[in-house]
Image (cartoon, rainbow, N blue to C red; front, side, top):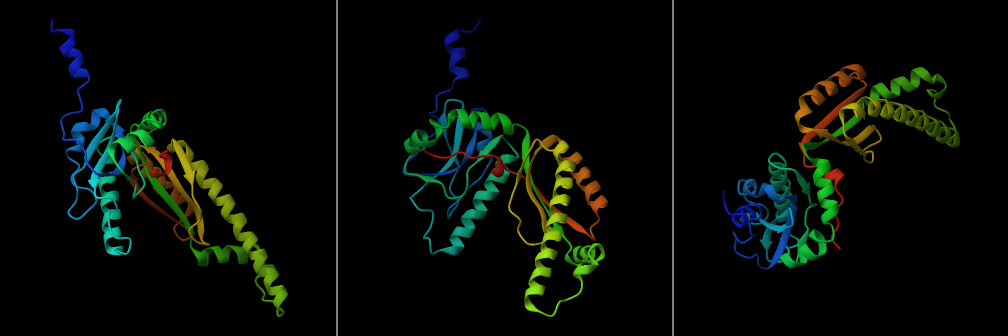
Length: 267
């Protein structure tokens, strides 16, 4: 039998494998302590050249970070900002495929590792562990349903022929325009509700976003079990066939890190 002290040491390894972090800290996200080895395979993050991704441990979670010299780039450097935004998203996409992850929004910089622990890891520890439990085995997909304008206007004309004639006076034209907008909104609400009823059985959670245009039926982020993504894709194809691409176009992006289902804030 091996001595208990050595066994305990193996269960709780000390965080001394890396040299201490110095200077400002850029945050990518939070993961479980058991994901430390996968971090080594993530590659570089933001910066030019890309900075190495390191970890800051707190209890049984890890913050994925890079060292930085304060600001990532000059605020006037649009090209640098785009490069770093792309690097941030790409690293989180890689990480989401390897580990359970609470992603951070782009551009979070802390003055030091101690400040990150004091203002985020320590006060938000319970929230972070609850989020990690919720996100275990999950990915985000974003779905945008958009009307085909010509088909939508054809439906309005067919169902409300009284709205097809163009009045001569200005006020009557405004009134007709408002009535058409109201009819379109009724269509949108009914179609969005129908879509959500179809999607809810295959999603663990949903966040409905703002419309991106006047033709938007539904803009929603869905939390889906990663192992069930093939079934999700088949159901989405069935929904698209049922509504018809000539009427509503479904555009789905994912799997993604669960940006829409995390709300950690530093204190």
